[in-house]
Length: 115
Length: 244
Length: 108
Image 1: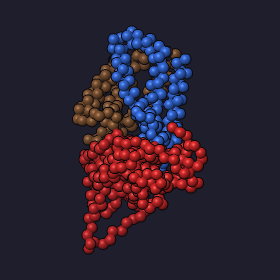
Image 2 (image 1 turned 30 degrees about the horizontal axis):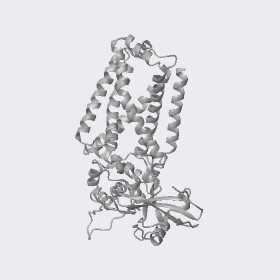
Image 3 (image 1 turned 90 degrees about the vertical axis):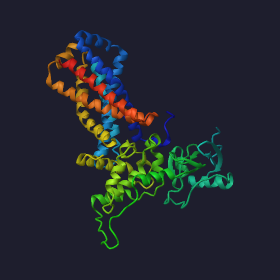
Image 4 (image 1 turned 180 degrees about the vertical axis):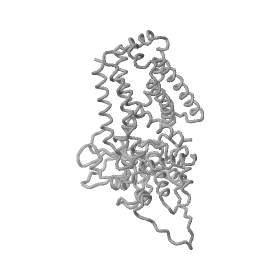
């Protein structure tokens, strides 16, 4: 893309871009997730083999990324639902901050949990 | 690129040409109280007689002077240079998302085509002999219409909208906002037709609620809220009668 | 069609919201102390509750994701013909099949 335009420098647009990009990344991840879980069909051993692979640092980092992406996609998506279906009293920009905060907290919890 | 050489002059880059063209930089005297329209006028009078630009009232009521200033669509007569020029620099282009006729003048035809296509023309059912309809000012419908009715078609929202840039079918915030005022006008006889039009490809469902239209509308209209209203109406019609 | 896709997109989102919250909570709980197949399967095998939960989750995600991806492709690539709609339908079917297979794998 050719850089952020002046007209795009506001929170609502940033929220949209993050929501869209997180959605695309999650959509790309989903088939892999389903296939990995499907390994259980071949027995617990096969799934364990995969889970051992999942202990690799870069895989753990990707898992952290997915937790954050899913959290942010959820919260920014809730804001869209609110804007479309609830009475409009404001652009609910505070929801963007809270949403990002929730995603950061989820990411932090994940790091603490896996340590 | 040279920095502003002193506090008495601005470096102003103005688009010259059509869709193909280039930015030309002019050195313009800075004044204490100066709008971007003043700057453009100075350039045309003292440096570039062939510079094409639009304006009319000069006092922020007509919307004719809308241009892109430092990447943002604005009414240039209502934009003080001091508020937008960083380091004494300005970049001025025609409105985005519309064809450029020459320099700072854009072709508003596609904007008005979409306005019409969205069903923006009022059609009454009453005739001359019928009693004058009483409008309930405080009804939710009239309040919804009144909140959106002051649009003067300046195309700033259309220019700010990225979905307009990405989706050539998209009717745009102004046209859809206008459609919303008619949906809420109890005298309008073709509400169902409007719902059919805005339910199509490029209609209200193409809006992703970025909110740039709300951010930049100079008369503080909220097209995104109007479009959300259209979304709800089309959904209600879908669930009530299966029509889409 | 746009109204129907919009309705499906928003409806599936409303279903996904609580499911995602539970899933996130579960993941954060489960990864503590390392994740093993036995742990996962002990929780899910033979459990009708989890079967229903993830069955609905897969269904909603298989509707929600392709509609979203369709919007992205229509706006950011030149692809906007009927073939795009067909491709998204195939994507939805593929996600549904893979997802239900995964649910089967951990429940049965």
